[in-house]
Amino acid sequence: MFPLPPEDRTLSPYTGWTRAHWEAVADGLLAAVEPYRSADGAVINLPGRESWSRCDGLEGFARTFLLAAFRVAGGGPEELLAPYARGLESGPGVWQPVEDRTQPMVEAASIALSLWLTRERLWDRLPPATRERVAAYLAEALRHEPVDNNWWLFPAMVGGFLSAAGRHTEEADAAVERGLARIEPWYAGDGWYADGDNRSFDHYNGWAMHLYPALLAHLSGRLSGHGSPGPRLRRFLESYALTFDQDGGMLHQGRSLTYRFASATSLFAGALLDATPLSPGQTRRIASGVLRRFLDAGALSAEGLLTLGWHGPHEPSLQSYSGSASPYWASKAFLGLLLPADHPVWTSPEEPGPTGLAALPGPGLVVQNTGDVARLLNHGSQHHPGDPLYDRYAYSTRTAPTVRVPDNHFGLVRPDGTVTGRGTITPRGAGSAGDLAWAASAGDGVESLSVIRGAVEVRVHRVAPGSPVRQTGWALVADPADGPGARVRDGDGLVSELVAVCGYSRAYVADDPEGNALGTPARVPVLEGVAEDGWAVSAAVLGDGSAGVPSASVTDDGITLTWPDGTHHAFPVREPGGDTA
Image 1 (cartoon, one colour):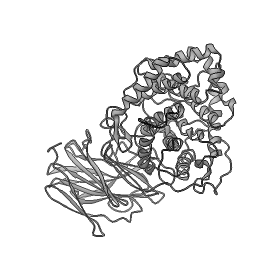
Image 2 (cartoon, helix red, strand yellow):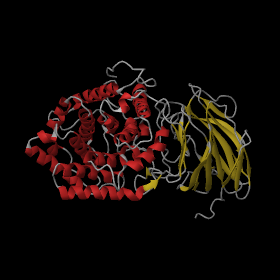
Image 3 (cartoon, one colour):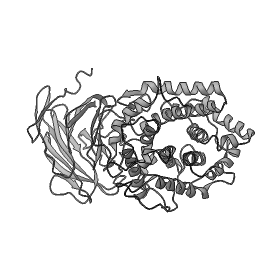
Image 4 (cartoon, helix red, strand yellow):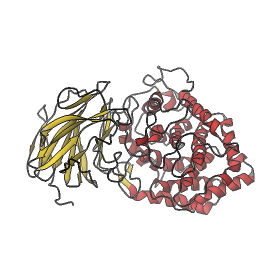
């Protein structure tokens, strides 16, 4: 870890970190990659695995260029741009070309954004011939097909810069309009976008789907009127801000998790556009908490490089496109430096982040934050069936998915002892009432309902009568089972427990020796049984273990839960395979 300023517990009573800490981290990250820069400055080849794109050197240049651009645009020393200026001289002749659905299109967007942010300090000072070559290279992003997801915003970002620079203006303006129009059908409501023509709801909402429209609006000056990104960004942050716990933990859900603290990007974007429900002190408290959490937990190598993984190196958190420079998409978090030093985000005392519940019918999710833990109930997000980063019924900031013994999973037990997958998720709605929220969905042969109140999440499944079933709970890196039944406790005192309500006859703890992103081994509470009447109901507890579990009564039409305080809640749950309207 590089040198940091002293903590300021008066201005930042929760994290101790200020704008000066963000600047120091940015400078340290930039200094750490310099030994790996090529002689001509155009590529940065970091040690580690190669991505499938085989353009990791270009990624190293583009993604750290973005970090330098945010730093300089926020008042940092202009000399940070010097090695990138040198690289731009030779880059167009060295970098892999932009073609249909290839990685250079992604990196072209970062280069274009960096040039736009620092236009007067860099672009306008480049020799005319260099500007011509770089513009010609970037313009290829306007002429090739992106992957049909957030990638549409990459040619849009390139187009925004080239139009502002007076280059290829007709093509550039068309690319902006085309990209913004393409993502419009993917808006699901409640502030959330699907990442493509599917139901993939994840961190790409914050670090792509909202980020690029926000930056296009900010840099072009088109901040109001029809199509302004502000209202949707504000709506998104109402629930997204709940996904961070009081210790800076973020959800281990979705792909590209090695981008880590890029998850804080949209928090700063909301402040930049004055489109946030958060107070300035809440914005900085959450963002600084996330950044500090990852750095304190070992995200950096001994050389000061961001590693491929989560807290430290972790292969299962990666995708085939992840390469040595991939983690530097985390540079997006430093967008906060665009806020001037006297902005309230940097001058207001830190305040606790928001707590509470948010039911999101559009994406089919429920978000709950109790301060010490934030969790997501998933009845609507799916990348492709079987992916543990999308298929689980629930995710949290204090846990991470397991693979050998799948956590937070329900399935039918086959004769050979294996368990069915969730299948294609069909959302059935989401809602809230007071201190309770629920979400429901259908899968392969299963109708499911999750109801959360406090630390207790009731998991209701309706299957064919007589089906053998298995339910798992939250996986913890923990000591052996904490007493009889399906209960474990980690070293911090966090308890994960599954309590059978009906349909289960056996409770135990299964060990996953491969662990998860938080460590090894992981231990998973398990319930098994036969759902004689077609109902399997349990309570999953993640907290201090003191929460009360409700009783349940079922009918042909649904279930009624009765809580220890006498409160009743009734929910319809249809038979599996029935009407799907």
